[in-house]
Amino acid sequence: METITSVRGFKDILPSETGIWHYVEGIAHETFTDFGFRDILVPILEKTELFKRSIGESTDIVEKEMYSFLDRGDESLTLRPEATASVIRAYIEHAMYAADPVAKLFTIGPMFRRERPQKGRYRQFHQINVESLGLDDPRIDAEVILMLMQFLKRLELSNLRLEINSLGCNACRPGFRDALYTFLKDKVDELCGDCRRRILTNPLRVFDCKIESCHQVIDQAPRLSFFICEECKEHFEKLKGFLNNFEISYKINDKMVRGLDYYTRTTFEVVTDLLGAQNAVAGGGRYDGLIKDLGGPDIPGIGFAIGMERLISMMSAGNEKFVVYPDLFIAALGQLAESRSFELCNRLRMKGVRTEMDYAGKSLKSQMKRADKLKCRYTLIIGSQEILERKAELRDMKNKTQVTLMLDDQIEEKIIKTVKER
Ligand code: AMP
Image (cartoon, rainbow, N blue to C red):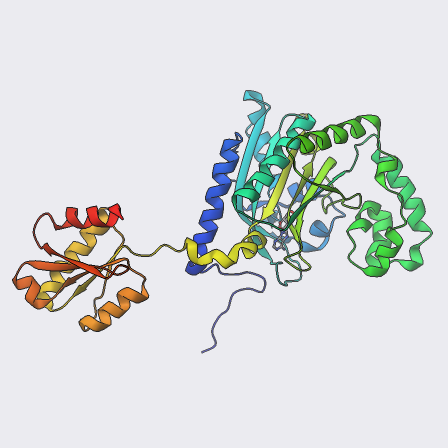
């Protein structure tokens, strides 16, 4: 019979890989907690309208990448393509701002985008997502970027580059948009189909185009830095000053617009040369109008998302380090020894000793082989002779030493002491 495989672009994360995932999540919890953030869990399914209104109708995500479907009634629902919109929806729905307008939140989980799958790009992928709501002070921008860089540092990642930009605000961006529109209108013939469409729908998006011939045109295009208002300029200058204070090196990338409509002022990305075409590890920015646009009060915010798969693929050399191995293997010979082992094995597990045994009645040699294969640190050998003498041999598989233990009421405690002492 034909086997059923997973959906294209949807990946299994196998037991040999989950150790590193938990490790990364643990460092995220630890780092973000140090900076005063708390985690929030939001659903993966939302009303389609939420993403249309926040991410923007003319973005790639909303135009062509969302997994949207009609529920049994006729409500359009969408598997979340990103988490910010959901977190803001929850912030507004639970009036979290009423108790304290400042909310520092993070969430970790799967996102769904129907992009063309390739290395580093999946249709279900995982993000670590951070949002700092309530303040528009550039110190918050610096704090959030500092926290991101600190998290990456704790993971001992290298070859990372921070790029920053300012996208201006509602006061200065329209002037830039008009100038860009005028420039692009004259270059229509040199642009790809997507960019031609973007001229009318959202000219800033042309900066995201990956096509080389478009790049050549875009390189000549006006830049926002010429149009930016005094307030935005001051905000950006202060941010740069704070980053310098913390010795965080960065590069200004004035072509970085990011793929979502809601960003204002600061945007940033962490990129690497290690991952080929999919070089962005993390990205984010300020979104001072988003909470209001989604029906909440006029409260500013800033956030970022880190791609787990890309992050982990940069660390995978050390995967072995994160796998948890059993503490003990009980090798038993004969029915009597096996039944005593079965009891001991589960009693030790209940006391927190990771214990394994074999139920197949195999030879001592093959049981020892299995203990080696499972990379157990200790083996307890209970042979048919030993059980008669009420004895067992505890072997240290690494140091190749062995001690004899009495098979009495104290054996569990003696094993626990040895295993935990190492
Ligand atoms: P974005 O929400 O597009 O700003 O993406 C933030 C981060 O999520 C990126 O820097 C990537 O690390 C990761 N990411 C985005 N899209 C994908 C994808 N299709 N597959 C894997 N990772 C992704």
